[in-house]
Image 1: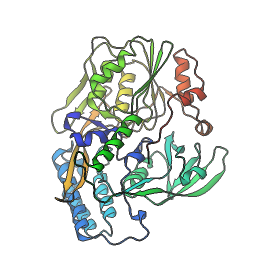
Image 2: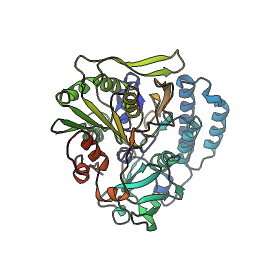
Image 3: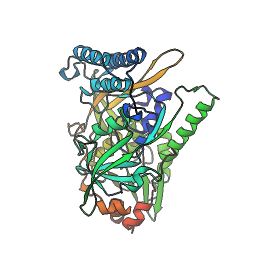
Image 4: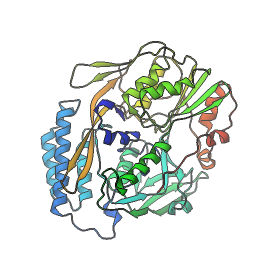
Length: 456
């Protein structure tokens, strides 16, 4: 997500660490841990009238937010009111609240916009499928397995995912499938069709790890629920922390998100300026704040640099990163993959267009717009909290093109093989280190920034 920090209420700012619509990274599932679904219960009862009205209220809020804030006042030719009426009728007849929630998401999906979507309310369940998967090229592969889950004995890193709950898995539909099953309609079990690195095909059924949570929570400061949420936030902050490693004259910077103040950007660059080469690892980075992007670019150019023209309801406005007094002027190598989104993509593309460095890895996600977050709430004594991300502007780069649905094609495409994934090797980082003039074998590169599971 690429978001103007000034538009985001503090209660929702932390959610910008990951895209809640898309599973671009391994962090997503752990962040969205409070969602229930029709398949999280053995028997499903029809939704009560109160919950139906709440789903309809969410739909009204979605329509109103789009009408008021969406960057294209013509909504790409969609008759928004007619579409609203159609979906309101469908929600009124929906058998469950979760089906109503899916219909709210479907209403927004009609805009075909990566940054306009619903951030669902928390639910009284915590769940984890036990595995993570990611696109490499046009194919999806298992990348991580959580110990102690049913997935541990059934799937392995390096397995190619041929089908996910009978849905084909490829670059064109990967994110939509993930949004459906990881956010809107989680499941008690997941069927996967897999191909292992040796070419053997199998089908597995994986049970979801589920834990019941409180249906109602008191999140006032000082309450037990408040401190529980605070601990969860601290765990997330730790998992998404910035990490730097020094190898001779080379700094390797693992940057998980663009969500931290620009003053901290200057602090991190204090450790970079004394070295000849920066390898900036933006793989799996889902984006973040406009101010962070501005600060990152300002610190790698000795002059002001235009990021993009903002095309919205108002007159076009250029987004410019203002140069700092002592920028890093050494060699720059940027790593990206299919999980690099939004601000991460903008950074990589500006580096290419300005001939500032080299970009290596996989084609990025192509989810590049500027959005604002609008929270919603229903109820008085018992409150339902949710939010909408609404695109405020398209971003047109120096070459006159948008990255939306296109992404950034690296200067050098380099992907791990299934056997690399199976053994934990990282040939992409190893190659970047070689270009920088230091020796780092793929096995050591794969261990440099260990993956950390959030507590369940």
